[in-house]
Length: 237
Image (tube, rainbow, N blue to C red; front, side, top):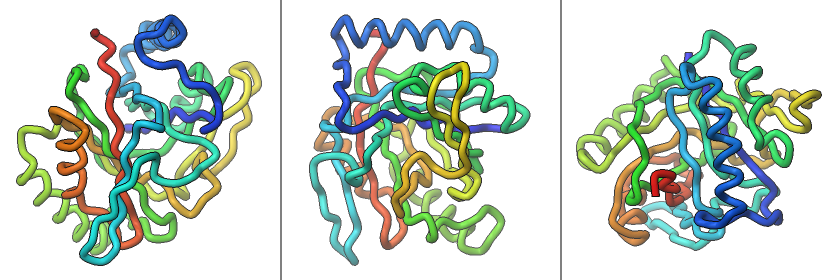
């Protein structure tokens, strides 16, 4: 079973910029984690800081584009993993080993669908799809099938630029881990205490921020949802 692990940190905390010694030290900690559990890692990426994000919200037939993350949450997403494990207990054991637990939180959520990706490159971007928690639909329902058809149409239109992606189970299935790795605090529910939750994600390629925003504007979201566009860090640089 696939579980998405969203790595989050506080919005006001200093974030190491890619290319700095501090960032390289953080990458080394995650690389050590990757080496220990490589057989269960089915995906993942590090993201540029949230102050470089672009947010798109739908207002009827109009798309509103603003700089910054999707909402003024106390915590923001800094990266993610996808684990291929048997159950939540195995996912929790992995999550408690992640460095993000010490200074932020890790939200675990079962994935309803997952499209694996290759090694991220310098032209990769991620679109986080945010929805109202009470508007998320469950797999196997007519509403889910209708939304899936819209995403299939987007996939056919976007074609070669898509590198991966997935859809999440409702927020009621989320589990959040935070605190020390030795004695983590484990709670039910998503990492943010706001009405909006992550409902899915896409990974895709684009030559620049403007092109990435144009692609993300075509991704289907609910009437009160939105899309947060973030550049993926190329760890092979």
